[in-house]
Length: 554
Image 1 (cartoon, rainbow, N blue to C red):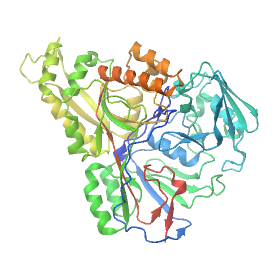
Image 2: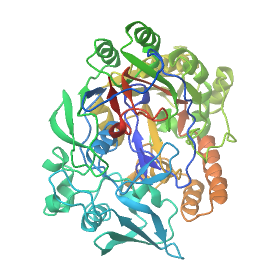
Image 3: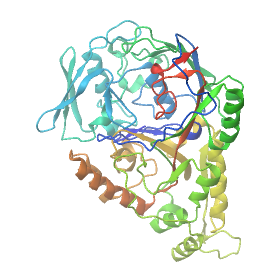
């Protein structure tokens, strides 16, 4: 998976951007699957009648809750980071809306040796970095040697643990050699290709904090013009982009740490492309109809799932039955219906419904507070002093749950969770944390419980989040360990038969659902707001994906 995915780390991303959450890294799959999207007519703009004249120029203004972490994907794990990296850089491959890899710098699909131990990729010969230097096989080799360098300690290390070496066979061909057949290879292919001529003298251990990470030079459709931390990032189009000069001249991403403030700026015309949170949807729908300035694309499926995560090093959460009771004490469907305005689907394990490997045949723990109380009592949690809070061995069942500042949907959902758990004798203290500090707490395992989201893309193997090795090299921040899950994850990564993989992945999902290391909540759908005269966006893609194909019309 790509966190986006961290770990097997494929690409997982922490989702915190507006209604979609920021991306931490997500998981990707080699099989490809059709996301659960619906292509509904856009609201607030008249239907097209005849051909519209394409405009060269114009500006896209969007907003994020927090700054990106930097422009090197080996260290960046939020959705915001992934989005801005994709503006500035090219990679060997991209994912399409079916989670299939499509060539970017690569030419054609990867070719494998018969024993699957070697993978060869051809790269195009017409790509240049924005400083004019050509992108060559040497840059690809340089880039992929970073995560397999012993000095690399970043969150993607697990993604590349099966990669033994990479070498160029000629100026436009590279060869990957694996330690063993690796079905999750797709997760390796979407990392931004870095310029060797600018970074060759920077030590791997220093690269994350280098000037380049804040002032990047890439070969993507846009160039970073300015980044004022906490205020905005401004990008200008790369006229020499190998995919063709984008029509949109500028992209500005404001840092607005409050979703309501972002919606106010949307209505004021200061922002023109952004995800609309569920609690603002009705007002924005009305604005779209009355102003005619924006149109809405609803029902965009995502690889995101929301969850309440339990730090399993804490004694409160080490009993599986207690974790199951926590889930049964939450009215998750009520949260979807009332907080998210129905824009979501319940999930019961760690695979998003948009995935080809998704199965609903997993243990489920429906809302049943009375049963939750009984399970907790059987586990020794009782209110012996009459204060309404359960205790066991002198310890109260009370804890803090963090969520990110500015995402009002999450803040409201956390309040509902607090109220629901209080009814079964559990005291939750909500804590709203500023975006960058929240991400630092999550990745640093500095939490007891947390309300968050993963955005998954690419291969569905979940090593980066759920394998025990990912406690150190991936995104297993809750310290989950199940030897049978580890075994199945490892077996799946060696399996190239898709039907067999589906069986193995279904077993993994069932075991994780049984363990309830997270309370799995729902997978949201997204509503995006766009300018009424904007064309070219893919109705199955949210945020700034494929912005280089967009254009304004007269």
